Image (tube, rainbow, N blue to C red; front, side, top):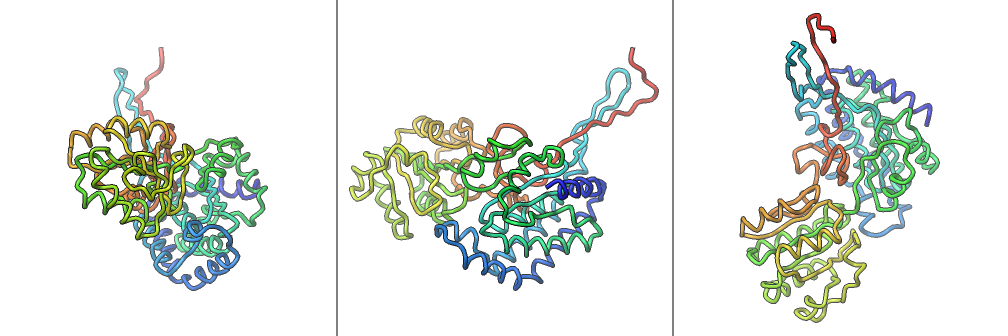
Length: 409
């Protein structure tokens, strides 16, 4: 860790001085290298899949195919096309004594990324780190070791093509768990740790890190269907929010349905989702309407299923929906479906989530969908960044003061 950390720190100093053209060239070349290496990446992924023994939802996260490799390459190109996050004067003012003070964006330095299952996370993280002028040290899950290595090789090709140090993006050399512990203690080398994975990983990082952490809690996301919702829209959005990809952190885990429309709409919603393979955990009011629904336990409403399971609760209006979200949510992503703009604006104003939506699927909580090209994670804390974390969110600032001979009295 000390050896890799020292190399990352030296590379970060070079990268911070590199102009936007060099950083963008590295990303474009890495995208081309990903496409060229697609057969090798898929072969490496096949090795990982053959030894994987987890759930279907996590298997979907791990699996790569030609479309997903192409999506990684496009993500790098989209990040390259974004405005330079370092070419920004955030604020400027002149003091009464004539000093001109500017607040200037700059990189954080060296990032440490610990992630599970999804090998494409490594490409996304590398892209955003390079765009924002940060070096990054990646440690993927043991289940994606071969895939991550093949992807990293393509990123290194892009860095060489742009004349930037390959050490700007490094990867853990083995699956040794002690390397994670070393990263968490590497305060002299790593400026920010970003965990991306399950609850146990995030909790361990937050508990043991001696480095600042940018993390998100579980994706205990809610879709609230208000009494003034359009039924067809509500059915379409909920099906997407729950079932498009059940294993991502933006998936809806709980349906909050307004009591005024529940008798008419709940049978339609459950039929739609059951046809897609979803099962349910419902409160007593919901089970009184659709008697075949399985009863929910109190713990269910605090569970991030990451699977084709949906919690259902009947609520008596916006305030009741907000109260449930406050009690059981994780401040990740929550949505309201309604044609009543006043109710929608009240919900959006008062829900405390990092991302809130009106008449849209919670699965839009994604850096690519936000126009960031990709994301390094979803932040739900209240320090520094919140929501999808793109290049701009991985910068800090410094002050530049210009004078003409002033001295302090």
